[in-house]
Image (cartoon, rainbow, N blue to C red):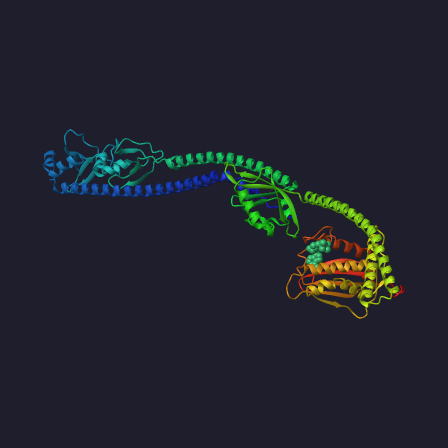
Length: 637
Ligand code: ADP
């Protein structure tokens, strides 16, 4: 039995696909990690870059300050060269560079002699400086620093200036915006700065030593902006939100997948239930789409038509199981069904199975509706009613046979009665005939023609009497009385009785038989009757055309039988079997009774022979009968 293909069941999802709901979350996490790594890396890069810029800025500012101090120093040296030997305050004030210096940067200008005694000091209101300790130009209070240069005739010229003013002069505005600029001592203590001190924590700073005259002093730049750590930046916050959303999406997806899975399981169960139900059905099911194409067949349907599902599915009408001789009608009925006009109570049809046999089925059609309520085709169920039909047919035949038997019995009785009734008159005719012959012989009547006719009449009357006796005996169920008979005699006697018709219709007859044919064991009267009937049927079958032929062929059939064939070139049997032809009352003739072949068969079978019918080599009919060969010790005919 071939399995019927069903709509494919969804395959069970592979293990890796079952966790597919977590994929968005995993991808989001991977992405977030990548972004985090990138942020960290770029933060480090920025930090490095910031540091390089800071170092460059510190170095450039330091060199600018050095330039300033160098130029102040050269201005101081120029004043020193021009000062008189015993300078006083006026002499200093007369020096224009002194005024410029005081306006620019200097706090005071002082001249001391060789013994560190004050000689001149401007401006007056600024307290006189104590001489700085060698190597430390900053005063103790760290608010001012000194530039000194020796005078040509002993003593020193001392200029006091504020490092804060130096910073103001040298630090460009953009730098002070960007950095906290300050001067610090060895211990990192702030000497001065551009602004209030900023807490150094979280900020980058860099310091370089400032050269003379600010020995042990360092220039320090601290970045004003506090750098936010990379993990506190906005992109990372956004990524965190993104991961959160992905987690929510994954969770929703997981719930959705679970629902789908449970729906799929329910569907699988239903599908296998339906499959089991369909397989257990003995009713054939076939689904067709709106064009009439077969889209579904169950096992029972395949068994009904004897075709595999692959040979059926997808086929369009005409279907392979439609009866070839009823294609037109079946197509009409198919179109009617497709139009939705199939009878609700079903209809009967006949199908051709793949092995050539036929089956009768009862069909019921119902519309196929899909989930959206759309009409998508037709589902038909086929119930095999062949058995029922056959038993109905058998019953009908039995009834017919019974009726025929009844008619046969009546006929037998009539024939028996007729034979009985004819016996008396025939006997009377025979004795009258004998009396007439005797009287004529006594009266010396010698007309040979009349006497011969009377003799022949006597023979025929005797023959008629014999026939009547035999038929009566046969119909009253007495067994035939076989005797060894020459086949040629049987044939010739039968031919003699139809000769008149043969000659009148100009039909050519031919007898073919071997010279040595054994005699047969037969009741000659009955067999002659059978042969005459077969010859008459052959004559009747010949249509009026010029070449009309009948041939009788006799030949041994095995060691124990002789076979006789009667061929004609008439209309032929048109597919009818000997059973049909020899059934009582089967006739195609307007005046026929349909009993001839039936009686023939009964006679032949009563002789243990057989009657057959087929096609002759001339495309007419051939009737064949067999008769048993007479025993060697039976009396020779
Ligand atoms: P009847 O001769 O009364 O019809 P039969 O039983 O002798 O009855 O023959 C039955 C039928 O068989 C005939 O009606 C005829 O149709 C058919 N038949 C018999 N012999 C031949 C033949 N030689 N050729 C064609 N048909 C024949």
